[in-house]
Image (cartoon, rainbow, N blue to C red; front, side, top):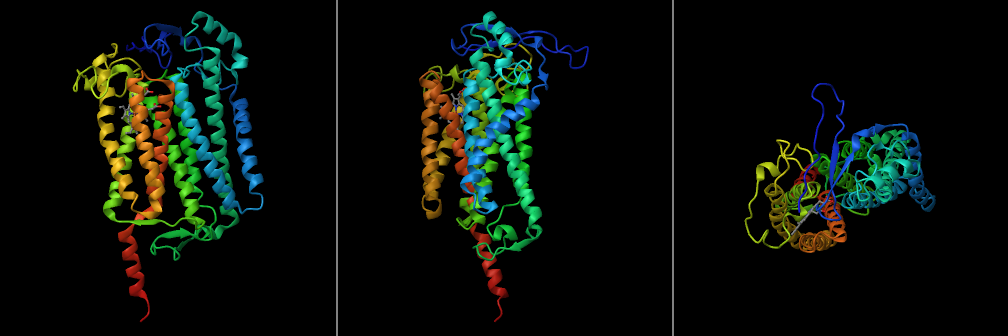
Length: 449
Ligand code: HEM
């Protein structure tokens, strides 16, 4: 049930000159019962000739949402438009993460073996002859017409999201230039957080600091670079896992900005939480990221079918596992650190660690949800947290006992993305109650007698 790895390697005698090699790709349709080989290095890995046409494609994807936001909020102040655009970009990035999982799960990640285009074209239409040749050589191989389209649609959507984030950054800086006084910080007097400083613009309900969308823009560029490496390094597990994590960090950045806008426009004020509860939120948030990294490691190593029973694995509560090989992070897909095929015990370790840590994370999320439910302003978030944690457990279990159906696998990624959004919302919506108390005591002590 498990796969072997890409064989061969780079020539040690010269810099960056790849040695032609066959790439072995696991066939997810037969779950590893047959092996496919393809000479990927016959194709140039980077061909920037379609870059401009791809950017136009991204602009076309982004034009719809941009027009919608600007037309529907024609009379609204710029800050309001930026807020709606941030929310829309968050929604589209969520879809992009789901579509990324779909791309991986349908084994379409190498549907176009070069970057940023497809065999040097901006769309699979221009690459028909190459795809035909690859598909007839291997009808269930990594390159087929449908896989090429899935891969390219993922790249178009990603470019579109990039254009939206670029727009957010440019418009935020332009607004800052038009209102230079926003640069100075003014003490927040209208919130329970007496000591906290916000910009004048935020105080008026204006745009948030332009550094937020700027950092997001840099992040989306980095994410694009990881997308390129995913293809050119042929699904190297550490790179694909970082690509998944990067997509979720992007969601977190956008959610943080959405919360800041709601606060700046007076629709939300930061909720004061006691220190212990804030620590609990922080620890659960950190555990969630660890669990996501472990999950990404399961899927990018195709270790899902190493255990097909539950709660046992291979009918044992402690199956044979090889942790050192399983958690060697820098190695090719399907290979151990010594270049030999990865062992089944290593795949079992990868799978089982994610499962065991899930019990802890699941318990932490449910306990946190129960605690947050008692804070009226966070009751909604608590309900979402509990609901998504249950969905995550159900879809994870579905992956194991139902033999990894596409629906369960895609929903599992969606659940993880949803949990990131909800917990980022809680982190940015809350403030330390101790600060609030001491800040108000401080201002009271300064009042004239
Ligand atoms: C408790 C919270 C959990 C979180 C946050 C979480 C998160 C994740 C993430 C982010 C992935 C990678 C998805 C991708 O690459 O697109 C993953 C994969 C996976 N998870 Fe979880 N998981 C959780 C619980 C569970 C549980 C309880 C189980 C099983 C009982 C489970 C089984 C799996 C399996 C089998 C995979 C591999 C799926 C694939 O290859 O498509 N997970 N998980």
